[in-house]
Length: 429
Image 1 (cartoon, helix red, strand yellow):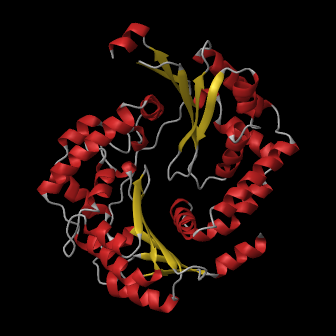
Image 2 (tube, one colour):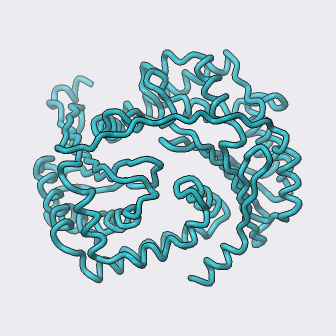
Image 3 (cartoon, rainbow, N blue to C red):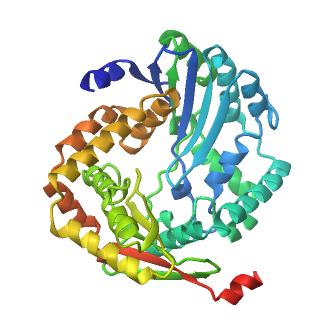
C-alpha cells in the first residue's frame, strides 16, 4: 500500500494561475477519460440569516448558461461529447463534477470558463429556478421525516453558528430571495482565487496547463470577503427537541459536538463511528438491531467539516418499542466507549475498514478527483491524503477512549425525537 501511495503522490502536481485559481493535476493514462471537479470554497456557512439557501441556489443556476452558451447548453454539449456532469452543495463547499473523454478537454474547459466568467443571472431563470428549489424542498425535506429530524437537530444543537440553518434554505427565505441578493453572493464567492480545479485522467501535463492558462488565466479575480463566523459557545447540558408527525414507527436522532477536521481527534472519531455502526458486527447493530431487536436500523453521519460540527446517530424503533428504550441502550453503549478501551480486535477491524475505504476512494478517476479536492479543502493541503492511513494506523485504544470522553458525552449532545401522531391523524391525511 505504501508503494501505491508513493506512486500516486508522484503523479499529482499542484499549480496556481496568476489570478489565484488553484490547479491539482493527476496523470492516469489507464483509460482515455478525464474527471474535472471544481471545488468552490462556498457553502451555506457563508450565508446570512434571512438569506439562507443562496449557495445551493447558485449551484442550480450554474447550469443555466453564460455569455457564450445559453440555458441547457452545458448539459447538451457535455452529453454530445460523451460526458456527464453533476454538482452538490453542502455546509462548507460547492463542487461541480464533470466526467468526459480526454478528447473533449478543450470543449469542457470552454464551458467551465464561460459560466465561471459570465454566469447568466437574469430575472426569468431566477423566478423559474426559485420554483424548482421550493418544490425540491417540499419533496426531499418536508415529505421526509428523517430530513425534518436532521434539520431540527442542527437548528437545536447550534445557537449562533451558520451550521444551524439547512443548506437548501428555510422555506420563508426561499420565497423572499431577491435577484440582487443572488448577484451579490455570486460576485463575492465565484472568483477564480476561491476555487480549486482538480483534473484526473489521461492528460499531458504541459498541454493541460497551457489550456488552463488559455481558458482561465485571463479571468479576473476579486478579494473574497473575510468574514469572522460566530463561534458556537460550548454546550454544557443536554438539549432536546420533539417532532410529532404521522409516522408508523417512533425514531430519534442525536448529535454530539465535534471539532473541525483539522483537529487530531477527527481520525479517532471516524474509527469510533465505524466501531459503533459499520456493518452487522458493529456494536449498535449487534445490540439494538440483531440482539435486543429494539431498532429496525441504525445509521451514522460524520464527515469532514471546516468548522466544529456534529457526530450524528439515528435509529428507528421496532414495533412495540419506544424511543426512550432505544435512547437508553444507545446511552449505555456510548458510556461503555467512555469507560472501557475498545478491544484490539475491534480497533484492528476499524483500521482495516478505513484502509479498504481508502483504496476504494482511489480506484476511479472521479473518486480520486473527489478525494484530492476534499483533502485540499478540509485539510488545507491535498498532500495530507498521503499520510491519512498512517494517522489511522497510529491510533490506540486509549486514543479512542480519550476522544469518546472529550466529544461523545451527554452534556454535548442534542436529541430530536419523532413521536407518532394518533392513528386518526394518519387516516385523515
